[in-house]
Each structure stands twice: as C-alpha cells, then as structure tokens.
Length: 289
Image (cartoon, rainbow, N blue to C red; front, side, top):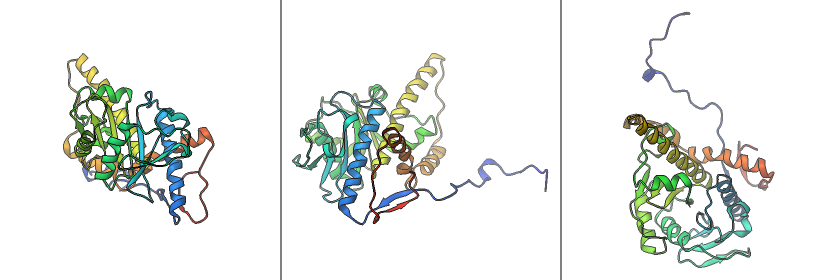
C-alpha cells in the first residue's frame, strides 16, 4: 500500500539488470578484413598503453593470435615506441620465433616477447590477446610476491582469477621459463610475475586492455591501502569469499571484459579522430561511434 515501507532485506531484493541492448563484437564474413581490423585494434592497444605510461624503454609487449594462422601471433617490433605503433609496424611471428610478415622498417623481435607469449598462446587456445608490461605499481606490488587481497569491488575482478609466478631468473629468454609462466597462469586471466611485472591473457584485445589497466590500478590501490593500514595500526577489511565470488561472476560474465574495454578505444579514437572503416558485409551490433 502507499506509504508502506518494504520489508524485503537487501538479499531478497531482485537485482536490477542492464537495460537495453549491449554492444557485441563485430562479425566478419571476410577473414582478411577481420585480420586488418584486429591489427588496427592491436596497434590502438599499444597507443592506449602509452597513454597510461605503461611503456618502459624497450620492455613490454602485447600479442594477438592471428585469425587466419592460429599458430602465429602479431607483436610489436622491438625498439619502436608504443605511442607511434601502427598496423603496418606489427610483426607476424610463428611459435618457433620466425618472422612471417612485417612491412615496417623495424623487424626486430623481442626475445622475451617470443618466449613468454608463444608459450601462452600455445597452451591456451582460448587466448586471443596477451599483454605484459613493466608498470610502476605492477613492479612495486610484484616485489611482494603475493596475490591481491579482495579489498574493493574492482579487486574482485581477479578473485581466484590471477596467479603469482614466484620466481625470478633475470630477463625471460629461456623457453623453459616461458613454459613455467604459462603453467602458472593456467586458465586464469592474469599473473603477477615476482620482481618483474604484470601479465594478462584473455579472449579479446579489448578485454586484455581492460583487465591490464584494472590490474595495475588494483596494485596501486592495495599498496596505498596497506600503507594506510600499517600507519594506523589496522588491517585492511577483506571482502568475504561468497561476496567476492558473486561480484566476480557479475563483473566478468559474458562479454564483460570486452565491453569494459570499449571506453578506452572510444577515448583514443576521440583523441586521434581515426576509426576503422568497416565494409558493408560486417555486422556491427550497437557499437558506440
């Protein structure tokens, strides 16, 4: 009746679903056009990383499994700054480290990029894109050699979905170490490489960019929270397993990672005023302009 106060508890309230139709990844009928789109997107991902200052000299790499030759992946040439990478600069590399394609003037393959990414792509057919970088907060948190605590809603994105590679043997140039890293990440979306940096591997370029940014921010927030807690003689409050699992399921369902990454590409396109021109044969569902 009017004026009555609901007696439902918070747990009994029905969740409010997203209203309206969410965007979906474009559907291509031409594999070669799809490849050009993916290379365009991968080059954008590098420039987004540069915007966030995720570059560190010649370190760092983002790879994309080729849609036509799934035993190969595209990667940045060693020595070219993330901020100026374009599709034409990318190298197509097979799982033996042989450069198959690449028309740019830079044709050097980063050995660590090959060792880490080839093993992940080989072990994980579901992984379309993997990213590794030496970021400020990622490196700082990696020095602790531990997993993230579930201290915020955003940390729950990584609830039981990240691992710690508890080893450091210098620059990753041995294939056996690449295999160990791939084994450590297993089926998870992310890994913290002790004394090294961060690694994210997912089913799309957008999701990888999204979760990498979130992982870096999660490291930053935990470092701040732990420092504040120590200064006040307290411990940070942890989200319990039930709520953390529920939150993870809600945030990461369906194309959540891909959808969450879209704003980063929208912002880049607004800054650069450059967009991919789809042919009329491509099905684009509610993609933001």
